[in-house]
Amino acid sequence: MSKMKLKIGEFSQMMQVTVKTLRHYEQKGLLLPDEVDEWTGYRYYSLDQMQKLQSIRDLQRLGFSLDEIKDLQQLKQLIARRNRLLDWRDSRKEMKTMEKFSIQSMPEIIVASHREVIPNYAAIGPMCYEKIGPEMQRLGCKCPPPGYCFTIEHNKEYTPTDIDIEYCEQVEEMGEDSAIIQFKRLPAIPKVLCMKHVGPYERFYESFTEAFRYIEEQGYKVAGQHRTCYIDGAWNQEDPEKWLSIIQIPIE
Image (cartoon, rainbow, N blue to C red):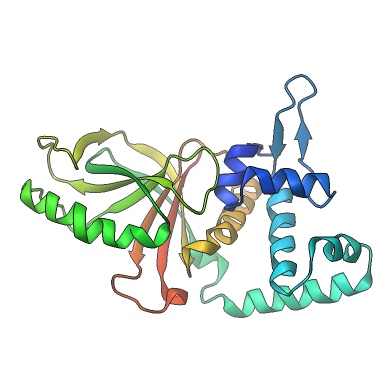
């Protein structure tokens, strides 16, 4: 079974950590790339690094410094603390693993698209109902039931601010572009891994780790840009722990 390899920018974006931080972790010996190309110097990361980075974050959440984490890697306390973290993580899960994943195909669709650099993820909601919604209504857009909308991130690496995001919502027919909305036709995708993410957007990295583990174990390969579909969020659910999103990753 071949290993999936991500360039440092791709890994940074999916795991929601800056390239600068990844290089810092590498310098401290905490998180080494899976492979460094001897000719280009490009760094590649795999599922193992996803899991190691999640362990580092869990330990930081418990109050450990980076130096302490490095020391703990050789001590028995690390095993005990890691087990407690796993128990804590498992207790938060509201669905079994098999209920989280599904393989689907996606037909060709027409979407109304809006691309904008937003200050943070919390700005997605206001952008949708204060700007995109009224403009789609003005243009007379008709959305087929039950409705399908999603976002695509265009940043080359993770950044918590100034997020270059594209919002797409399925519509019945092509319309006339405006300063806010552009219409486009998206091709069909034969096979897509869909995974439910329950919780705030700052923890997407946990679901990406699970999704990539599943993809690798099943012998699939990533075959395109992932989408994030928002089902429940700040617009209809006050508690971020109950927010529901669907991560959609094209595979082959």
